[in-house]
Image 1 (spheres, rainbow, N blue to C red):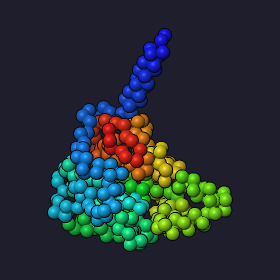
Image 2: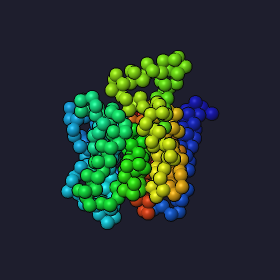
Image 3: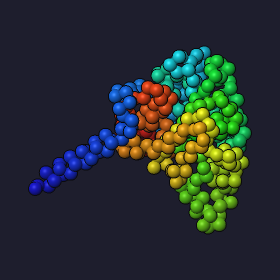
Image 4: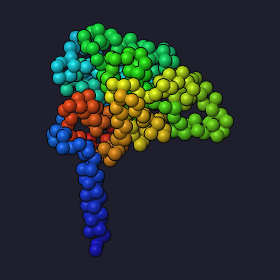
Length: 329
């Protein structure tokens, strides 16, 4: 066999394997799923539909709302009666975290809201750096503001990174009975090694120095992620990780560089709660999203839409998602 034929044969085999893998990623209950895949509106290039572009815009417009978010005149429809509150992660803003998901939720008919919270640095481009328990109180007050404006009795929470853990904290501890859907993307639900930074500090006896650096650069939230004894984690995990009547979804990525090991994002269901722990690569093998771009992945967004409206699930159409950028294919 010639070299050209061998190459062609190898490429064909790889394509077949990829097709099989993607086909195998269909939900187990595919018979009950709408065979039509989600059609996601792709904003124009000027609308910053990837993390890097949104981050650049955020440098010059730190208070900018994500597209489709914070229309305080919005009233929930009968099809989507729960407004959705988006909670960003550490060192992020509402805009750079949610400018991919927010306009899609709005186009699907949801009332969407997103806040900036936890700023103790005075730098508007960098949020969620303050005390995490105090930040949870701030988020809970915002959720109540959304309730008052929309007239909704229930609110769905979606959080990324620290925002995922904050969503669970608010739903479990601060607003009982208000939240029945919590969706978390790469959440810091448990202490992490921060890609080995804390593990290295433990081995070298320099863990306190690591925490000190994180605080100096304005990341006490991240520092708390490394400490199981921090009040935030004692409160949220000490009496069980879930509460009855709430549906929890965790979407993690094997390429997470902050929540490490990535399975630290997952939680265990207690009595009366449902938990779906999902590794995005087990659904869409060619999704290369890491921590920062997870909220821009079209594959992840389709999962979110199914979880927000579980009675009308659609087939997930997998696409290649690039690291850091995301949402490009």
